[in-house]
Image (cartoon, rainbow, N blue to C red; front, side, top):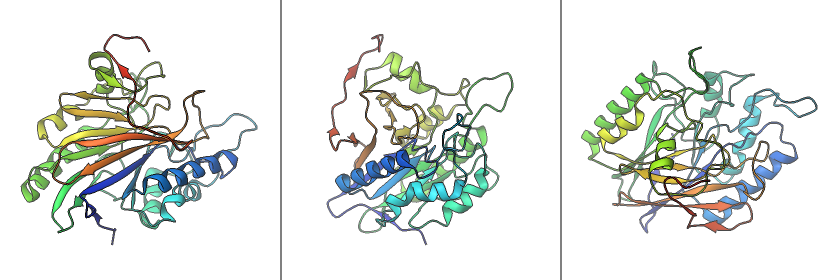
Length: 317
């Protein structure tokens, strides 16, 4: 049975988000990623860890560069720092987890067998592998917060559309029905959502609202089509924050119509980054009975960043 997720006696529940680890061969760079994760876990002592995709990298590599040869072993190694501490952890897949060597279904089967995971298979017949929800309970066993997880896919399935995949209509329909069911059973509780590829609204919030943090990529690499997940979240009224990865040197957050759209902080060393932009993790703290949440960054040098720089609409950089 998966471990229950329970608010602490002081009413808090802390989540660490690791993203874009890109684990390949357990070499030197992967060991640097492991050390970062161990340091973050030691500092933050989370109640849950969420891996928001590209946990491993199974894509092409340049000549002379180490490649992943065993996807399942790599995924286990990438999550070992968390599992060894007995911390519950959840995962969603990114575009690089299953580029070769393994299918999403095969990797999900392996993930479900790993220790201390609370990842779930999700409904059969819905696009992707690993669309599911979890509930954080108060110490009395009553539901207090919802967590939604989505498989945001990999690359566009249509030849006339460039770029990345989008959350499909059946995933959105599943979320609407699951949200409705949960609200009928346990009341209108706040929720967070975790997935890998940002929604198109991430670009909108950067361009039109005050945001906090950085966009060092040329843009938000969201799908080129908008399938309507953000609208569904608005209409259901439960999701108050979304958390993604994918764009390694974006780490901003901004509020759009009452939903905080947040990037994680890229964790892995076995992939591109930016000089002066250290790897790290995003931390999220929930409080029982409150819709609001706190979030900050924990960086590789051990520092925490609670106040990210302000970005105004229309400002450069």
